[in-house]
Amino acid sequence: MTAQRREALLLCVAATLALWPMAPRQAQAGARPVKIVLAWVSPDAAAARDCQSQIGGALFKGETTINYTSRAAITGRLGLDSRSFDGAWFDLDDKRFVEGLKNIRGIKSETEDAVVMVSCEPGRRRVQAVVLAQGKYVTRFRAEHIEVTRPFLSSLAKGLIDAAMEGFIP
Image 1: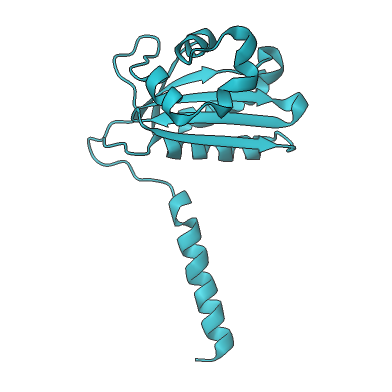
Image 2: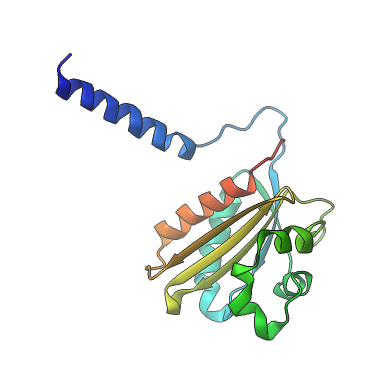
């Protein structure tokens, strides 16, 4: 085998391994969907409406059951007030998310596997999200100085679902 062929083969193997986590998951027989409580926490709800709609639509296409909670419920549980929330929520330490959001429930829900908080600010070209999975795994997403496009939001939603499934056992 020549050096060029060996490099090409290694490149193909590396690309396959890199893309493997993005492969669609197959639901197991009898498996239940991951239950997510979703909170839109954008500072300007009207400006974020399209962004939220696109992310929400993509989340419903996954192996998920979505329930909602309010921004006010999240604000209070994290020990913030409405004035301090926008500048502080994303950078809170993991312990604050774990302690503040444990046992949170969506509307008409008995249990949740993950809490997903999303802030879309298209005017500032920024999207932020925090996912708390299984009451202990905190994952943060932040994209700044980007065009908030449908393909970007679809990819973000897939990442949110993957983060929500951290530690999930159907």
